[in-house]
Each structure stands twice: as structure tokens, then as C-alpha cells.
Length: 217
Image (cartoon, rainbow, N blue to C red):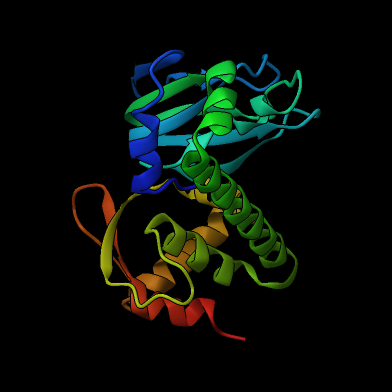
């Protein structure tokens, strides 16, 4: 869920109950099942949300970056964390205590509007992801995940953009398929010129071309 620059500016008006955390790679910000007592805003870096089922199976819910916030379940009663958040790379993250966040939403109308808009955008995104899982085949879902990582929407005209490389196992968890199938699709995308290896552990997403895959019937 992405916050705007306006939201970032409004965050600066929260003094009490706010801390800036330096989170090293692989460190947990919060864990599934723990008490939800704060909300977090990502300033720099990358954070991954995962969930573990009762049977012990782990799934990746989202990978978030600068401007995104997470842990908003703390605002609903006496809640527990529904997922685990851990940094993918060194990150700086604002931690806003539940009390301070609720007060800011009450006394800062502009901040409240921005936050509600972001919540609605997340709901729309979740509905799109659900429809994607129900109706689209895994090749289209992989293309859509790559475009999301590059911060593109289906109606955009995106340029070529470098994104960090994820393992086939991680992509398989996000897409809902197998690592071997991800490997086949990634090789196909390379052969078609939809993605390129950059040589530094990342890939270049050819946004305009890859969008055609997402929009296929």
C-alpha cells in the first residue's frame, strides 16, 4: 500500500510516538501472531510480508518498498499480527505507535484522507490479485508480478526498469505455481525480449512489451 509524498510530509508532523528504525537485511519488523501495537512506514529499502498456515506452509503476500506502509491491523481493536514482515535489504522504517497513529488520523484531516485512500487502493489491489489467481494462467500472473515489482499498472505506458532479482522459489510462492514453471516462463520472457539480465543480480523489465502479456485474453 503506497503512501504519497503528501503523506510522507504529514508524517513529519507526528512527533510523539514515532521512531525511525534501521533494519538490517533479513531482520524481522514484526512476527505473525504477535501483538499489533504499531504501524510502519517504509522510508528506504524493501520489506517482504509472509504468512504461515496452520500446516506450516509459508506464502509470500507482498514485497513493499519506499512509501508503502504495513501493519495497519493494529488500528482494529486488540489485534494480533496476521503476517510476518522482514527486510529484504537494509531498510529505514518509521514505527508509529498505535496511540499516535489514531491521534494523527483524528487531528490531521489531510493525513486521514490519504490513509483511507491508500486502504481503498489496497482493497482494489487485493481484489485484482484474487481475480488473477482465479481466472488467469500462471504465465500472465508472473508477468503481472514483474510489472508490480517495477511499480507499473495495466493502464500505464511503462519504460524499461531495473528490478531486483527474486529466486524462482519466491516468485513461485507469489504467483501460485512451481519453481520449475517459473524458470520456463522466465526463459521464455528472455527469449521474447520481455526481460533482460543486467549482470548485477537484477533484471530489466521491458514494461511496454510485458504489459501486452498481462492484457492478453
